[in-house]
Image (tube, rainbow, N blue to C red; front, side, top):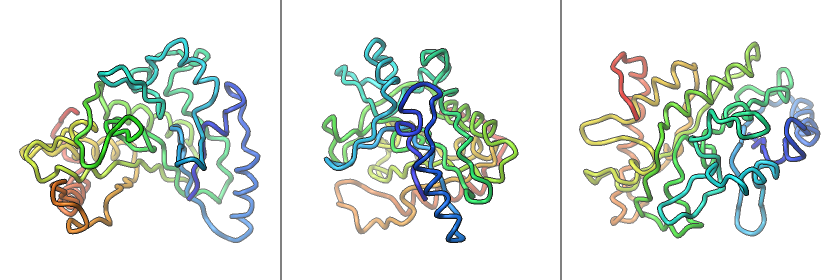
Length: 261
């Protein structure tokens, strides 16, 4: 599994793609008879002081004159980890929309890549940036609300991915976050601020499962390995119950009942 960073591949300018480092890696993988899962990462990468891969510089230049391309909290702080879903269909990026700039397909070396995980938000996950540690969030805080339709955003990005990879023998993968803290509280507050409209009397994951099913996409759920006893009591974590709920939602993903997020 390898991240294909937008900030590296299209970092030199709009539509100026440089796949050289990745092609070398793909060649080594193929020579060893292995297969590869590629993660199309359209968010930035900041891991302590050792790694810093921002979004492409020309995107950041757009942000200087139009900072509304980023998520903004109620205090006015901008989150430059990922473009807000509010610009999905706005031609602000050299006459391309945010959905259109996320079409990168010519790196698919035949026979090497089996799965392509499509970045859908912060850390590549289908969620809002409701809990940014860089802006003061501390676990198990509930985070802050965002706006717009998360499912509509995922639907459009996966549409673009399927169009880009049409005819390629790869599986499309989408990652959703396991917001397990406050799951055992009736409010499900941390899930709600991240964009998952999940309540005791409403399954917030079935609409996501149905959306992914329309694209024949595989779900990568991030907290499948967690157990409740590992979490602090005050977090009211329900990781195990959450995983079971998502599994049931996935089983029934072709349910015809409509819902909105």
